[in-house]
Length: 127
Image (cartoon, rainbow, N blue to C red):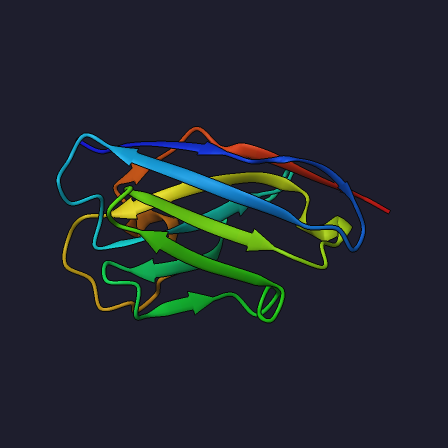
């Protein structure tokens, strides 16, 4: 079992920045791939970014490329999402996810491929 706890959400204005953190516990291997998803009101959950176990491979959705950066610290069992130049459309509940099964990154943004989830942290961006 892997437990994931997000933190760092908040309210900012357009153009502002936030850093989300996700603490993993409960297993020696937090997840081969870990990442961030988000869900806006009345919308489906969508992939934001994921990172491989060693941190050498990352995937980003087109709508955050160049603005968000994902990283991980395996010694601390933490992953981070540095979000810059935030826009109102970035508003939503941000979830940390982990996939502990073998994975090659294909269809990475499909939430059904992840077997552990946090409770989410809310991000609100006002115009």
